[in-house]
Amino acid sequence: MSVANLNYKAIIKIMGIIILVLGLTMVIPWIYSIASGDSDATSAFGKCVPPTIIAGLVIILAVKSHKPRFRAREGYIVVASCWVLASTIGAFPYYLSEFTDTYIDAVFEATAGFTTTGCTVVTGNILSGGLLLWKAISNWLGGMGILLFVISFLPALGINGQIIARAETPGPVLRKMTVRMSDSAKILYITYISLTILEIILLMLSGKMPFFDAVITSLGNISTGGVMVHPEGIAYYESVYIEVVMAIFCIFSALNFVLYHYLITGKFKFFFKDVELRAFLTILAGGVVLCTVGLMAGTGDSFGSSLRASFFQVISMGTTSGYISTPYISWPTSCQMILITMMFIGGCAASTSGSIKVIRVIVMLKLIWRGCIRRIHPRSVVAVKVGRDPISAPVVSAISAFVLTYFLVFLISILVLSFQGLDIDSTVTATLAIMSNTGTAFGETAVAGNYAMFHPFLKLFMSCLMIVGRLELFTIIILFTGNFWGRDR
Image 1 (cartoon, helix red, strand yellow):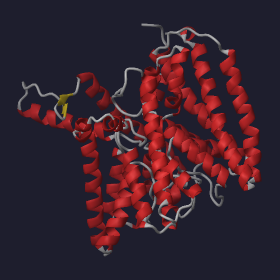
Image 2: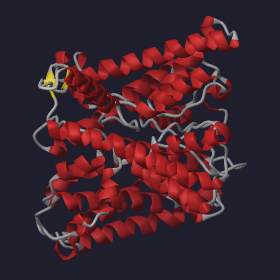
Image 3: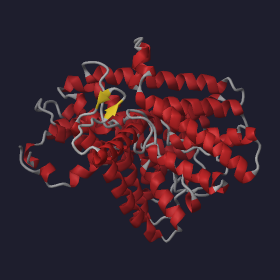
């Protein structure tokens, strides 16, 4: 496919839809800013919302027709372009309200929102209610996928949503729940919305969290974005009930959302026998147990306090939510290494969590085991299986390539961030936190996931790295290959 053969009209029209969606979602924090008397945020949204909505409508109405053929390459271009576009447009409220000093800082804030990384580069300034609501909404939109939100509109455009979903949805294999991808997207978002509403209700039942706090917390929690109302985080509420509810919904959000369709349709066998689900819960349980024992042995804390701290912090890191309930940087080294390991693994495929994903770890361990068996029996034919199902060679190859590429990008990113001159703990864990979309690191960057100390160029680099991590590497990397822009084959 040459550049001239790209379906530009379809690409531009989808970008117009994304611009319109961004403008419409900004209306909510704009109204809240007006109602709460936040003049800076009101002015900022007032300057952003009308031109954004108008621009989206003009593009949609101007591009009336396009070629029906929409191929995989257009899908990758659309996904990459729309995520960059969302971060670029979403940055203006932060910049125009003077919450950030520079537009680069504003882009970092917006990217951290949409990619559910949840970190910041601002010190000494707290998000106002309207901006906080915008960050929570951007978390929520990015958690399930910005483009997945509009896939239900695409059949009217003559575009196959499966192509876009494959490029945006995290996980090695995208399992469709229905024949039409648009119907699958609707089911996913109905589940997503239902979980959000349920958590809002449960958090309000605590009696310590007002409606606004419950909304912000739920939008950030369901998306595993980690946004909170108060700078003290979850510790502000001093409630075990709230910690348990948030931890449970972190787990719900880190599960493969296809499993919820199985539950709703009565296919309980597929849910409870899912290998990735059982492995994920086992990893979390093992991490909680090891951290509890490590805290009791290393700090002398009681079993109850150690279990409480370990339970929430392990789940927070294991689901890449990035919440902080305790000063974990003072934990024993063994406990910190467990948290770092959890950040590397992440949640399940087709969830809102980031990082490598449990299913890939399972397949890689199976592949290593097969290598050991074939050392002993060179002529044996040993299939890589997940449960009783053999995994095809192309899928195993793709997973292997992803994991190797993930660590290669991770090492290169460490080298780039090392030019800031921070200690090795801060540099390595900051890279992992950004790339895995966790946001919370160790060392100098541990305090509330603040990256203000980095150079503006490195902030831009980290913004790109957040998008690369959220779109799982190849969606972005292939755009820089010659074959992608070559002739049709």
